[in-house]
Amino acid sequence: AQSVTQLDSQVPVFEEAPVELRCNYSSSVSVYLFWYVQYPNQGLQLLLKYLSGSTLVKGINGFEAEFNKSQTSFHLRKPSVHISDTAEYFCAVSDWGYQKVTFGTGTKLQVIP
Amino acid sequence: EPEVTQTPSHQVTQMGQEVILRCVPISNHLYFYWYRQILGQKVEFLVSFYNNEISEKSEIFDDQFSVERPDGSNFTLKIRSTKLEDSAMYFCASSEVSRGGNTGELFFGEGSRLTVL
Image (cartoon, rainbow over all chains, first blue to last red; front, side, top):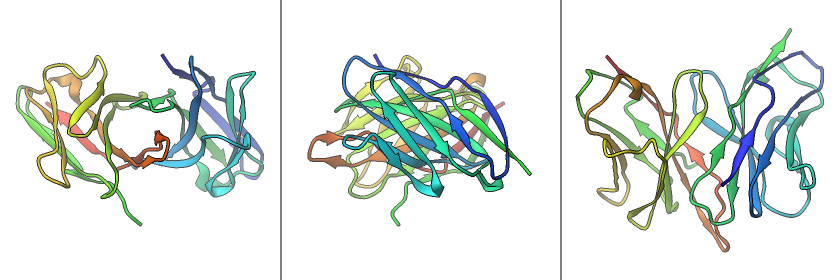
């Protein structure tokens, strides 16, 4: 079985400061990893994904994440956040060929002006 | 840009009533999903559907739930007799098939909020 742990339920950060949202996963096989963002009252939007290749993945809105197999982590980072980044961020994992994607519990990013 | 569309955006129903939530996945996608999110909680997998049959379902997806692809475009979730605890946002998603199979990258709709009174 696969699972995802997001260690922080809320992360407050000042505007223009860097941020890291943590994600750890467990799976018995090779995985695909994703970060999704959910703005208030909206659906989920893909930020970035790791399928294979380079372990540093760049996504939309200036976000990036690094896949670390030895630490089973896929932390999301942004060097300088904006007010518009205030949202909930979900880490997710899918096994190769698996029929479902498992989401973490989400991290609410609150950007403080 | 192609998108997943869901209707209705919000439905209020009485406990015990049947509800059908509708989704139009992205046209060339072959895998379809329903997820739900109870207010303030995590996004939970309900069911995946491929080749006109359920490929996987969670323990939440009991006999009260069913899915159907009645035509070439719609994908529906039916709740036969709604309970108070079914109140949630229901998200439809679809994904495409690459050379290696289903990559698991999901494209979500905006969601249908179900309120059971």
